[in-house]
Image 1 (cartoon, helix red, strand yellow):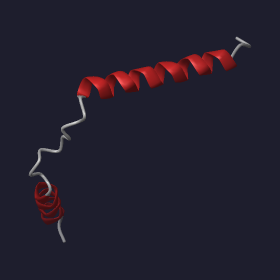
Image 2 (cartoon, helix red, strand yellow):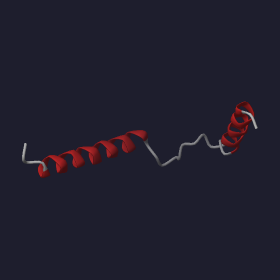
Image 3 (cartoon, rainbow, N blue to C red):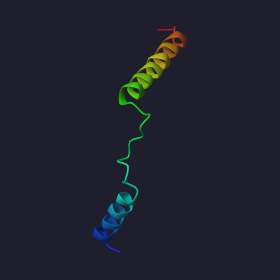
Image 4 (cartoon, rainbow, N blue to C red):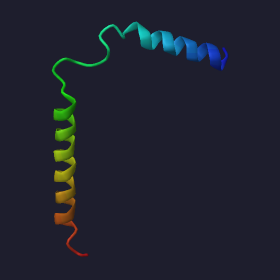
Length: 54
C-alpha cells in the first residue's frame, strides 16, 4: 500500500460524509469563538488568582 493510494482512500472517505458541508445549522462561529474566549479568559483569571507568589 503506497502513500498515494492511502491518501486517495482517505480523501474518498472524507468526501462520503460531505453532503452537508460539515457545518451544523445551530452552530454560529461567533458564538463558538466568543464562548471559547470567555472560557480561556476565565481559566487565565483562575490561574492568576492561584499564583500569588510572584
